Length: 384
Image (cartoon, rainbow, N blue to C red; front, top):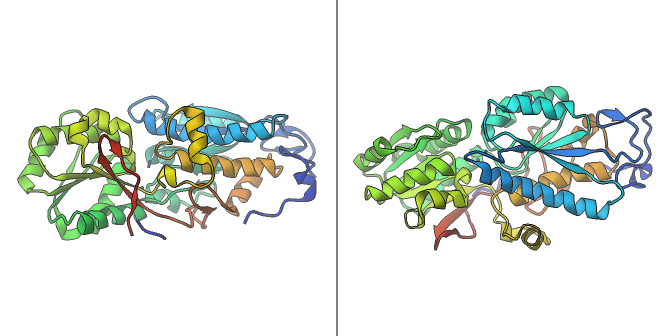
């Protein structure tokens, strides 16, 4: 997964615009997403790639819901030529990612992927997507290095850890006024990568460091280290399952340091793992827009569809899916053309102006701090 600083849709031929799903084409042949006849291609699919089961499933479900909302709304308007959502459950496990990527690549009707959701699985799967020419738009993978591999098919709609890390450090220094910080990471591609940037940004304020492992449950050595350092703040790079247990054990041991973490912890699963009392006062940063600030009717539409307010990454996933749907609506049923379409995309989404640089990074980035009060994350405060 997952990383406040503020950091053109091509014209479509009139013939293509005749159909919401295709129109006419100068290609002849089959109804394949890898090429062929664009005329009324109604077999197209968009894949969701991320965790639907496992320790980080909540975050993946949020993303799938956002993509599903966009696709359902598209299908309501294009009932004669619908798009199918294909779910690829990675369980957040990088070891499963290559096999899932091959499964998506082999389904020639999948024309684009919303995901991969997490940074580790992105590192494992994206080289295969790049080789196959299948475009991916992540709503949540934030590891900075992902955008530096020269992948032509890689895009993401939120800022990376090079924006989130310094913003988190700025919040710790300027808003909290912390003088001694212990930085802990979970050794994952995402958690360690982000924590290292925070360490560098905090400089001499880092009183000590520690590393835990995913699925670890006993954090007493880490808690002892935090207490010994006299920390007034702790930054944790990782996901909500371990973060919640660490915060609970800190509270149980009487450690008063403010707990600050990242977008991988911005989930009710953190509150469940820590307990509402221990979780109170914690802060998470995220380059994701507060859902109540999303433009248009997204917030109300999501509530109606899922009987819940939008959760972390839901709005970003809606935007990612919308880009692919716009490509389909313009008549694209060819993977290579979809890559070029996304590359030159420039339209307003519900979270920001959706436009990418040469590395697939979004042109607009903001980072927000969310404080946990009264058993819920408050609407974010932009870190400037």
